[in-house]
Length: 418
Image (cartoon, rainbow, N blue to C red; front, top):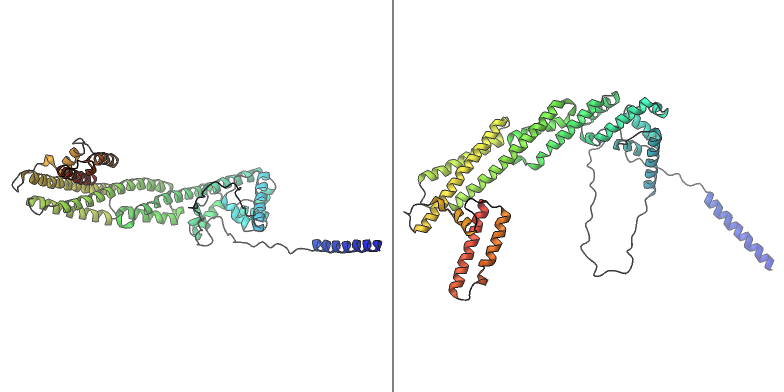
């Protein structure tokens, strides 16, 4: 009986082992590689869809109450089968390039590798697209390898510059590349890089606050980006110099416009109801009208020369100087009324409210401190003059309150003028 049971156990083991062996030798279904896209050329993009930006996850706001004694759990997702296959294909391409002596490997190459199931077929398609003979490369022809390395270095330097151009321009650039006109392709890439740098001025200066000549210049730059092959090298250099001049003019124009609006606002809120002569009223009206006319001209006229733009900015600067002088006259008239107590008292322009504010803050009469120094001095005086530090009697409290109100008023004056 024991022998019969032993033989039954052996026969069952053999049957189960054979079944497992058959399952192991069963042919698996072949892995099908799905092509994500088919790249048809070196330059340009097949579809106009925007590239999705990577999602950046912020740091968690919560913090543990104490240090945990348990080891931190880290989970690393295993790469999928498609990711492992893509990595193996890239390693195979790198190994082929190293054996031949080709370097570097531009990003254009991987578009062909990912669009073909066989890495060798992708390399052959890439060589055909850039005008290199794959048969001569396979035969280790040194001249063809040198020419291939030159093209690879050119494409590596270009990178994705031509990804945003029109398909017909991309076809012309590929024809130049295949024909060996590497200088023409390199010049077109330099034009695109220069013009894209200039086009960033559109984001810096909005259209409603942009000089007319700058707006016209940016339109020409956009036209050059659409067809870089029509732009010459000297034209690209001239455009770069013009961009520097226009950027400087735009900075000066924006500063004068902001200063003009600030001065007009200060004149309006400080303008007395009576006491100023008719000449001051006429000066205010002329300054406002002239500044408005100059701003309109500089914003609307698109064919002004560099000298005309500089002259317009200089005239606007002169208007601002006249408004500052008028503001000083207003402050001097108000100081004269406070000192004399009547309307007939003569004004003292040397003792304007701005001068008294400088003296109150213990600055020199000709000093022009920056915002940081003014803020520090205000904090020092506020700590010394705070009403909580005054005596308990009514007279001390009243004087401390007056001085603290005066400190804040003079601080507002200096903030507006500095």
